[in-house]
Length: 516
Image (cartoon, rainbow, N blue to C red):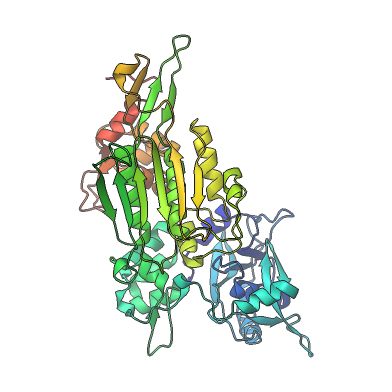
């Protein structure tokens, strides 16, 4: 039975290169494997630990080779017994989650090693040696290295400093974790654990997903579990909300409209983004007398907003009671979160896209957001914001914090040609249309009236149902450009899908379509 909260095949194909969170081993070699498990347990960068895949070979660039070399059936029990004995040599004892998986007909052993609660950990440099020497190990890029000198001292200083999101919440009960929410997450990320989840208790499922722990007689949920898998996480963490405030007369005006989003972290973030996209993003079409092709610009590019808001959800402190605030006017969109970035990051590095965090504040939140493909991690957020603003032709974003790093502000200026009233220029026509992914756009172009899922999938020429659902259907539903004919019965055999008014507007705005 799989015990991984991921779909291994997708994991290997999507996170292809060996890195700080994954290592491939073609065969069983206890010495380097135990050192790597120790390094993941130490989680020096607060990335959430990592995975060791045994039986998966890779090329010189660190990319997995398919089909994998695999492990013989008669090796599996022997490896597990030796692994158990070797893990007992880690000080203090640490045991990764082990799962036997099958990829393209080959058996693999996968070790999931989350960041440990009792770091720092030490492991022997040679498991099989009679005289053993223990060392602290950490991950450096795609390698496991011994922690020495100042690095070792810094690791020792992290003793008992478990990130807030990975701590046990002793004021909550295990049954306050929602099993339906956990199952929905596993289904969305394509984990094979989703198949076993209905037969597991809340506690058993939560332990396998590493969102609960503690002794058997007194289990506790972890903070990250309550944030993602409780309907009202604000009961445990006041201030876990996103406030979207619209200033029709500008920030100095007398009028404003406010909408507050609460709920599980991923849902809250998506709902806030969808609300902003539907209500405040506008495309301006600029027609040119000397050529047929028009120029299209957005007042604020959606991809930059998405990256900035998810960045705030990822990196804010959940020990503070201040919400994330999105302030929107005709001139700029501002995202405010608390506290500011790590002091090791210089403000000027943000403007050039070179800001690199030394250590992540919320290792488990980042882990879940990555599995949901809401963030890439590894300090790619700021460069992506800069890239998306430049691609839209917008002014460069501004990043602000104070000397004490108490808050962090991202300002996205409006495109100078956007939101021009129609009467001011006969060549500029503002149109309110949604932004959609390329895949969602392809789906919209294939829908005729009301269509069943299989009919749409066939029209797109796609064979893989899960790929179609995750890459085409789900984004189109989230972006509000299609809708279900039976929204209260999402799994009904009679379910059909049709364009919404937003979807029709987007389709009509595409080149080659007749405009109304």
